[in-house]
Length: 219
Image (spheres, rainbow, N blue to C red):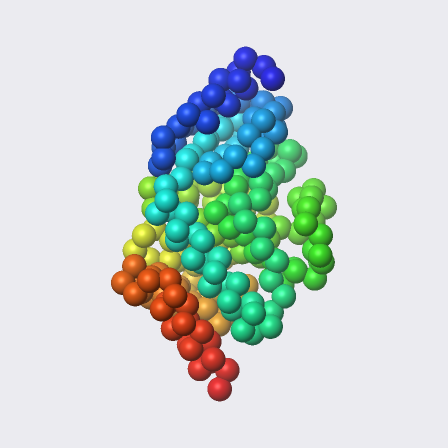
């Protein structure tokens, strides 16, 4: 590990919750070495955009919202018998375009059959996830949307603590829309209401309400 990478590693592993630090003029090789050294370190997100390296730490609040949205999609997958592959905050990167990011969650829905039962994804040959999630409680992820566009991600869900908005890739930029492309039964307003209910009624009651709503949509 180089002195520079050691510095990045030490900073990354000693940041307080909800902190962000940015480095410029970082090589792709330094970025990849840092990712290798960090391994499966919890509570961190690392992005790279043409020489700019950003390291972000997460709060418990951030993780609670991300986990709950995973639960919602997991329950939808079970209730509607949909094949959805979950890949969490898997590192998405392309050396050719010098871009990489780690979403708060990512899902294969329409492309799930192309992934099959594999647990390793190679973004050089595999399709991008159909949907990624960004929870922006303490940080704004919109500056990273260009990374997702370069990776060809069709849809982003962004939750800022008040509202969940849905963004579809159109040509080379994202446009805010009301309904999900990956999961057309869901809209930004439905998801926003569920997340608001989470803080009022708790996880179990909100999941029960979501289950009842899903069943009502099938009648």
